[in-house]
Length: 131
Image (cartoon, rainbow, N blue to C red; front, side, top):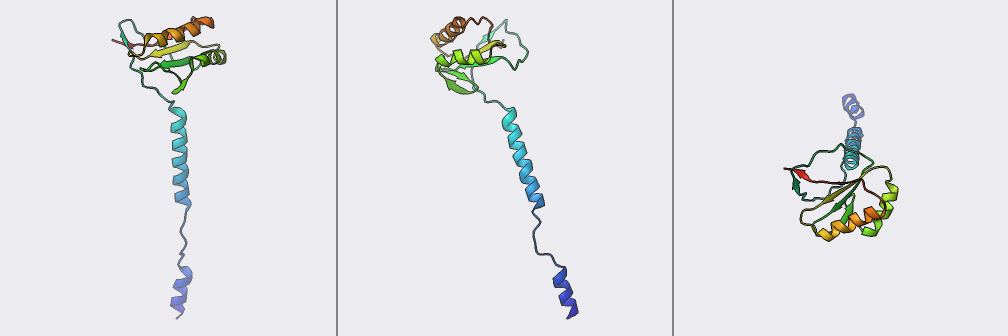
């Protein structure tokens, strides 16, 4: 009888949740880092050019994109052309990179360029793929 009581006292019936919590925190950290380092990307079919050259990345550069429908985007989100003035005032130091889809209407490109010139900006990079 003593032996049976000894076995009952020695068995731990609780579940250790420490490894589960560690795994959950590691997954949370992974998803936070992935969301931080992967900026939203708008798929733009860039035209090709024989004189296209790579330019060094500049975090101060303002990147604008025009999709095939002619809509203007900044950071993956659509914006109105009137918002370009506010974006330029918030990015006074860097150049402006303009990514225009090859199927975009030319009027959309001219509208953005007109806004940039009206704000006195001539430091515009027009992105193209090398041939």
